[in-house]
Image (cartoon, rainbow, N blue to C red; front, side):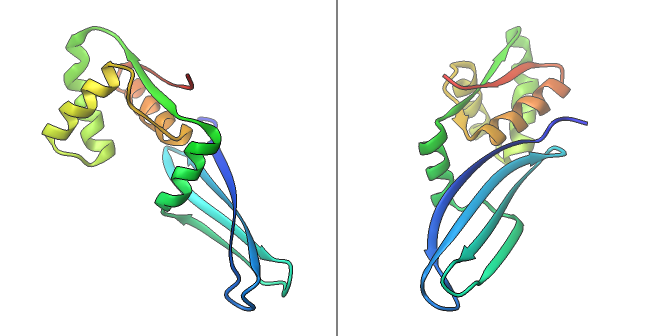
Length: 139
């Protein structure tokens, strides 16, 4: 069983019960090969509390995570003959077509494909399972 990988962010929102400031903690995690987004929120004014598990990572929170934690790059090494295998993984994991897979492949091979730590670790693990040396690294 592989170790979970995660990054978290703290942010504020408006309490749906009283309108005061709601303190929120969001966590993007890679657990058992799946990305998940969990949020715990608490209002200290009225006591409202909620936990939402396994949701979709909102773009605003992803941007915040990248800003606070920095980019993680996907790096691969190996012979050029592995390009087809890399594209196959990218198409499957990212849900993209062949043309976009070629574009992403170029970025991966140039060391210019990045995202959150859990996102890049997920791709690296899938690539390694396909026999491709890959790692999620921070510059």
